[in-house]
Image 1 (tube, rainbow, N blue to C red):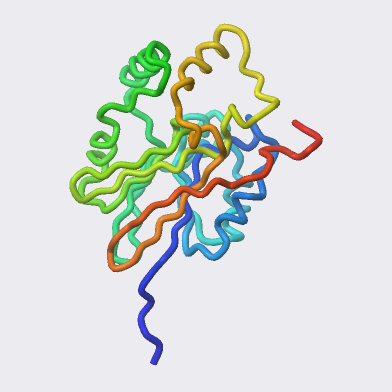
Image 2: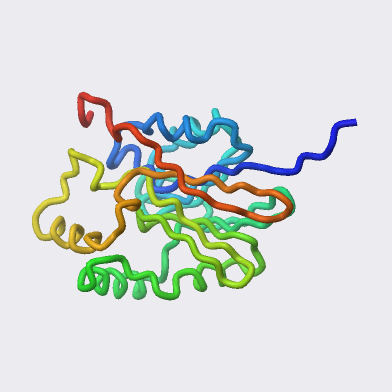
Length: 219
């Protein structure tokens, strides 16, 4: 008789931005997800082919990011996934329009994203969950509030790792200021892995390594 399985691995990815920032998914993403049981994409996919590629590794659950509607992707804003006796909420991480605008302005002034109250806000969307995963901010985040772990691995597309980043002028300077205080771990492309065992979710960040683009540059 086969003993019941005791652990599961869930891949977490966000902000791939294939089609609007990158021409294709960096191969390190697929490498990082070898052997996972499920993949959660926390939005800003921008090209449906990304989900098709990820499905070559494992089943995929995805939510809609703020760049996805313009790209024609219709996905849920938030979902709860049940796996291995745990409940995992998935959201892009968007706050209300006024909160977003105020937080961006504050972030430019402070020189770093302002995430005060974000974890509790995300948990409030899902109720009783063991973990919430999200994206949007292009930086890693990990905290625990009560019984819930709140986690973002960061982003696949990170402007600081892109030699062809075209954010210039006033907007480009504002963006650089907004991200100037981000730790080094937030300046490289990352995905995440959730290790689930005995009803406990343990997240870790996995840098994907390699170049964001082919050696020939943007296409």
